[in-house]
Length: 508
Ligand code: SF4
Image (tube, rainbow, N blue to C red):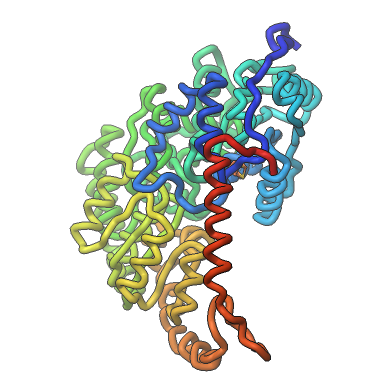
């Protein structure tokens, strides 16, 4: 244990009973007062908000938690309110993480006196077993970030186990997608320092004989194989996918000829790659035009001759055109999601023949998706960055699609309106999308869903007259609307929210 890590730290009092449903301003102000102003400024720059403050998605920290839980020999500790940790661990296990999540509880006293920091430090020392772990990720959630719990003071490593402390507050990191970037960037920067200081572990499968292209963004497991085939005529190989699944892959990811930002929202990770001198290429090899442009961009970034690039373009162009022709999509579609891959999926849909009218993404505009956004707009698609649920639903009502692809509440609204719906996260983004494999991976699911319209109509006819909203169901006495009560309680709720936002009441 080094001495610096033993310094007790007093953190300012703040923030019990506030969270993502109330009090974000209060938490933000507290974080600034606690010395985290620069951290929040960095988030605001990397993850710009607007047009509205907070996209409606899950707790952002789920993204970074999931990245850590997917890594071999990496332990995870959360520091935050028990309710947040309950929700995060519940969700991570719902999604199949068969791993324990460490938790350091706190109360007002340990938060205010700095004892929480000491408890976290003690927990890290207890867990730092090099037989079991390469790294321990410690994450400050909203309240510890607002209180300035100084994870940066934790030892950088203990017994050879790396300690990575990150702040992932919901009032600073808008989406779970961007939280993945926070952790990925922290690990890439750590690994870059290690690589600059001396020899590091080689990749598990050995060092590639060819220059590699690192893929940035989680992709379907078959996609790196497909991308490897696309790169082969260029004399390149597919490198690791970041976020990585093992610490040693970080070195391989950094040691590349170029980075393909398949998902365009990894702003801090891209900064880490650029700091290592790497060139970054946006968009992805989706559809004929997307793949053609991507191969040329990768070739230019890696200094590959035009002849070699043309070999790949010719070899795969025909195959992709054939796959698109064999897997046409017919029907009007609206699409929205919060994974960050919405624009590349949209391109593939358009190339497959879909009448796509709207694509909404909870992620922000970055230069790495600009090419996709321009292409989509040129094909008559409205592109909405930082899309709100209201915008996604309004688009569905405006365009009356044959299929609404979206988040859970969008799909729910679509089904209520007898419009077939597919969840973007589970059913669309988790498919092979790249090269010739993309059309065959996407079209059958989309076409089967569109063909289900008659079933939705039958269901709507069957349930006709059973009421909606508060009056849904079979009643002896149908509930009577009480607008006066609603008004009164809405006013009370608004007053309570104002009080919390103004810091007048913080008990829960
Ligand atoms: S940590 Fe997540 S769940 Fe908890 S208050 Fe913050 S955003 Fe909400």
